[in-house]
Length: 430
Image (cartoon, rainbow, N blue to C red; front, side, top):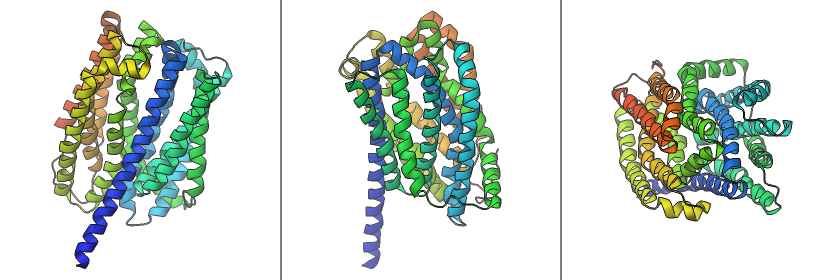
């Protein structure tokens, strides 16, 4: 009887945790979708395209932070719980502070020269300061929420995101209502809302004190795993943004807005992808820590079946309803916008598969194949992006994005390791 009651309690707890994660991801994706809709409708396509081009710099900083700190933490953290998890997270917190300091120094030194080189002239120093503030606050917030997922503090993560993502929507709506919403004020609002979440997270994070030895051990472990992931983040950024940047240069900022708006409308699928990236690595690392590699494969296969079916179903609905969705969400309808929405809808099952295959490789602490896959995609993008956009316009950009992701998927499929592995702790990063 007690065994049955214990099983029911574990099942109820698991359902409760899953519900919290679902609510959190829905909050993040829903807020981002509403923010995009608000910016498109208020700023117009050309100005939203300029905002999107600036946002690429923030995403670049976030990708480096995830590669060096966030992604390794999701895999290493659950394994360190067997030793002294509190000291590990305090040590990684120190690493995050150092990373944020580097963002401020390097970002401040490079922002203006890069803006001039790309022809994306800022409206005074206030816009550059706002971009730096967003980069720092978003990275700090991402670190805190990923540490919460790694430690199983899902309700804490939900509180963080409610302050940051709910706050950004409130601030932007207030600016729009007072007719003061511009690229600069939008960036300031995003920085302020993220800072609010960071203030709460830092106050309730726990001890930040860590012995120098613990910091050195964390740095060594992260460096070993992220040596490929850091390079991967650069390659992945180019893979994700090369065609958007080419569209901005060749066709103008409005073309970037069409691409970004079309991608954002798939917000329902962002919920699933974000949940996969934040929750599955922790669960997979826990299974790997026991050396249960066959169980890991069964777990990922079950996710592939269920998540893949859901992704394909939603993608099909969005592809069929692309034109009315564009008209209803953004207030306009064009053949190019509908094409972009259909293209991204059909691409999402591929992105879901890439996410699961990448998690499996990271759990085996094999990050070089992920790097090779993204470098291949980035190389194709850098070579072909400008020509594809010049010759074929937005359809060319969309085709290039699909081709590069299919190449990444094929490389990851080829590089998958066998189930048999040495116990965790003896695995080498290859």
